[in-house]
View (cartoon, rainbow, N blue to C red):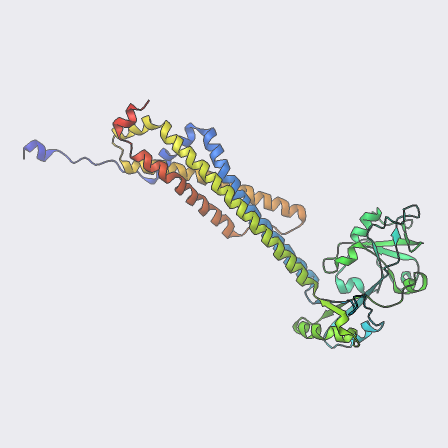
Length: 406
């Protein structure tokens, strides 16, 4: 071994710090901004769809929780079912009084549907065009029991329940073309003119009332031929003993034929509706995942083309001392940066859509942290998977092969 050989220093490739990795990884994005934007857009659409679906579903669930918290989950309805012969059953007139005797029951109210009483805006409306509006005799304490509120006007009172006065459900008012309530606002109920004194907001726990016209119990009996038998009773009970009350309601309301009485809990229906919405949201979440996958394919395609177009650059870097690992790191970093840009934009877009729609709908805006973190992690995983093959391919190019490429 000669002196020259002993004194020769051992050469080693320069190390790339994280800042250097980011800088060289961003070269391809800066030199081809339009292609980078379109590739990132594919990722952004997928992430925005996933965050938006999760956010809207969570916001809808929060609104349901808020609604149930305000209205209570202790409302039970008792309604007339059918007889063994398939005919409509009839509850006793004193069903309401009998239910009031149940200890845990805190409030009871009822309505009686008059199936043969039609409602029209005026006498000029053809009889066949009823609009699906039902007519109900209602007790004065009905709003307090079911949690109904008035959009305009007033509820029936001890005076107006004896005269031709009516309160419209929200959808009934819309079908009848009734907006603001005034002393001149009238509808035709059972061939008689009734003055509209109020319009209800949608009733979440008693949706049948939305498409109904409600009149006082006394005037229904004296002028509309109402037989006085309730068709639906609403009860509020002690939450802790709700199930016990539920088990005895049918036998109490109609002791002679408890099998002809249906007992339900409206909040269960709302929860079932929310579960259905959640199932639909899961379907949309799958669609968002497919969109994210398509975006990942777009990033992979972009990176493969980038390797082919930049072989001269790769060859020059290899000639200047860059190792295979450094070339591989450069293109992998470029793929991750491209995906991260798309993922960040998608998270912002999905969050913005959720907040905008929630604000428009009057919902609380909820975007779970796991959705944003999961979206970012999914983006990086997609970016790593999409950039791995192009990065390995770029690192395997020899300097002479890369520099000689046309």
